[in-house]
Length: 158
Image 1 (cartoon, helix red, strand yellow):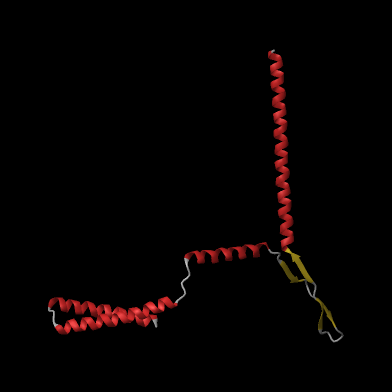
Image 2 (cartoon, helix red, strand yellow):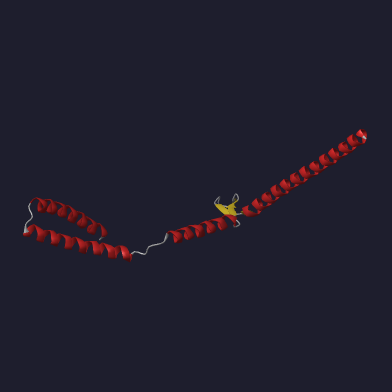
């Protein structure tokens, strides 16, 4: 419906343009009446288009941003949620007396990926904390050495 209205409005614009050109060259009562009718028809189509536009629910830019933020939060929480990967280990097959294969057992393998990831992150944090503590300890030892050297120098100077 919108496309038809837009096409009709576009045709009305072209019609008005030609009528105005003709009216400008030779103003007659007939051309004047045709222009008025064309303008009225075009106004009606524009009002229909306006009603269709008003009927569509408009989302404000801030509402769009809030929706995007909520989707990001959901995506972030999905990343943090535990992931369990399940696969089937090789199937144990037995043959009956007639030589037909019988599936005896399927062994599921479950890997808790989130737990492994959390453990790896914890180990990494511990290693970083240990490195930071070691750095602080070395810094303190360096300060102690510097103080001792200053004392020795000041004693020698006295």
